[in-house]
Image (tube, rainbow, N blue to C red; front, side):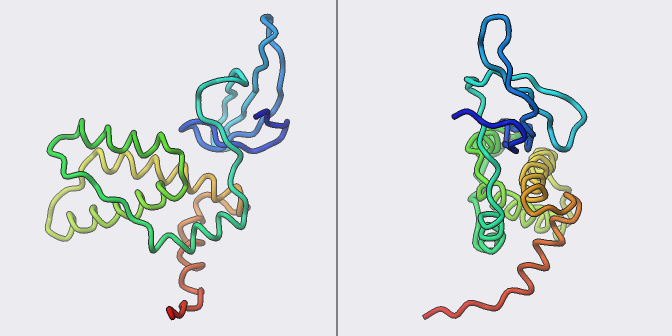
Length: 169
């Protein structure tokens, strides 16, 4: 799949990038010149790279995702060391799924709240990966909903609280 100039895409775990140019290098191989939306840098990447790339989700998909967030959950593994927990999180990130990121954020927030409530300090691995999940998901939602990234959590909260309860038949 060839992306177009000015198209917004998700590039690996770098987050949302804008395709600034498509050019051929000396070996005639096509390269994307990507500009991360939330960083000041440029990334040159072969168009046929094995690194994951996809278009950002649509506004409708973003809103559907937000409405599904309360239902999303992942089962954290019962691990006894940070290496296993890190591998678990890396596997989840490799899926590049907004739903998985949302579920991860919700589940880790619950875990951290539970730990704090009993006087335990949150695990540094959890804190590291929740931060990365929030950067990726909130960054994409920010771009497709056209709101500042810092306002995404508040937008999610307001959207969910203003929604009419659904009747189950």
